[in-house]
Picture 1 (cartoon, one colour):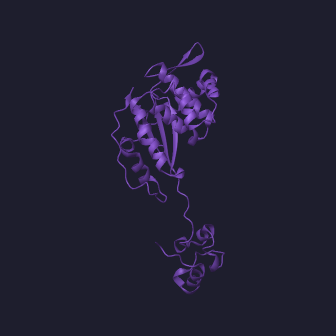
Picture 2 (picture 1 turned 90 degrees about the horizontal axis):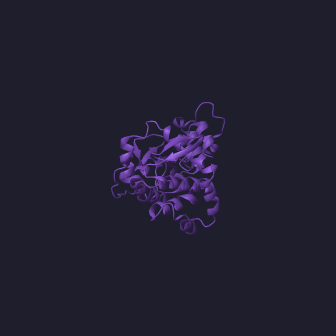
Picture 3 (picture 1 turned 90 degrees about the vertical axis):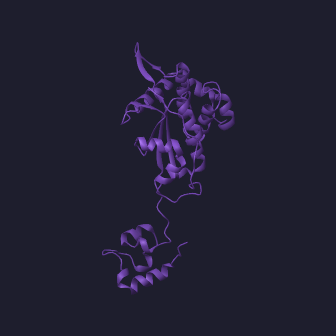
Length: 256
């Protein structure tokens, strides 16, 4: 552990040693150089102020483009994404979920309609989860419910039970109204736009972007051990959970 040098000692060293002078234009006296990060930056003496708190590192940004009934999507969400989210502090990982995948949006007589890879039930599951996110708003509230849906026997029939366990404060009636009304359609249209805007275009699901980027290597690393990948990419202080992790191999994805 690095020793903390008292401010008075640092100030004395700065005054006595020519090599420790502050940057030209520093308007602060030596005894204040380490009083705050802003002052240390202005005087260019950050490296000599070990007691300063480290600036917060940006979280790793992960977006998951998926389908509610795709087996590979469900396994990644349940085995990798949810477990990694549980193990890491909130400030390390920021997750965006986009339930749509390989669906197709159509305009039928002036109204939007959706055709999903695994049939109408998957479209319903996608919309339930989109409406759940819309109503709950807070990620830590809706993600456990989505985990419950995706890990259970039925994505479309277990909403009430999952809400009772993980988010009893949410009104299932409001979610149902969203699914059956214009809001659900608008949410799915938005997810369609997000999915179609991917660059490169998605070829299968689950499709994972890390910090806004998708590469074959990042996809493979995320599927092999998301925890290990996030720990590797995070620039801040690593928690104990970043000791290494191996997870079951994820089956091949749902291609178009």
